[in-house]
Length: 381
Image 1 (cartoon, one colour):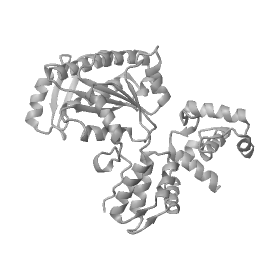
Image 2 (image 1 turned 180 degrees about the horizontal axis):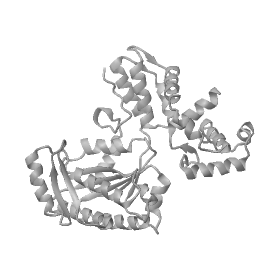
Image 3 (image 1 turned 90 degrees about the vertical axis):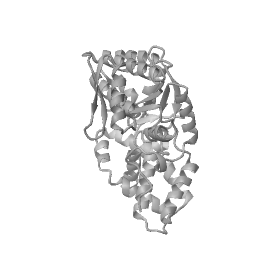
Image 4 (image 1 turned 135 degrees about the vertical axis):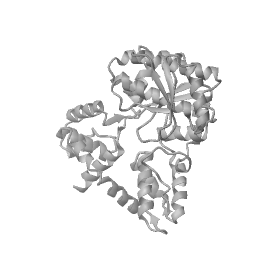
């Protein structure tokens, strides 16, 4: 039986869970050509939400592209990711070679500073080769020509740029921000979706009046999927194998995972794979599966060893205390650490990005699997 849970790729359709309200809100922003600043924890489902919207909730005439810039390190790589995204949006789902060939001629008439070609090697592609040697000019011309094409053809587009906060790490970051703001302000028939997992950095770009992107879009925080909605969706899929999912067991998993979509899907995938038809998935069974998955993550030990002994101790306290009351006298005495040392360690860990502070003061881990591994090794030592 095909496993109904996927956790290692972006999903849509039958593998996508819920988020009806979020979908409706985002589709409305896109139809009204409003820029969106989407933020949320990593692995919460931002990319899958966009995939679901692009594939199943937008008119097929709306061009779309999802560009991930997480691994870029310079403006050349930024240009390459952006141009690849524009190329993908132009061809969309079209497979008719004659139509694509005619599209190339049409596109060329609007891209005056680039050579447009049709590549039929494997999957058909439209290639855009800039005639500009300066990557800053090439990026600006790319979008201005793209906007001219959209306007003349009476088309609309949505351009999603993932891990957008990576811009601040690049050389000449301020210059790049100014360039991209100019492009966003000159957009025609299009919407930008600026996506990020580093909330503080991303919102700092858009809420600081001294920054180029100040108030350039509407903020959209993506929370975890509602746990009741998630439970019903998961239960329905376990029913395909006659596995009975206990509600309290799912609640326990949801709480342990802080609602992280990817990890919950991974555990459900493993449970569906290993349990026999007719099994009852209880808290004990689910906890065993979580532990089996966690102890296989050997990189966590290497990650922990990057930090000083005080920082390691503090990480374990944060994990076991679930991010709350880590400075209580009882906790500090039990773990043989002073308040000043713990506070200093927290500041260093936050700078490193391994933990972050929620609005209610809770300290959370960027990687939920690391948190669960720390909890496991602390309790079983």
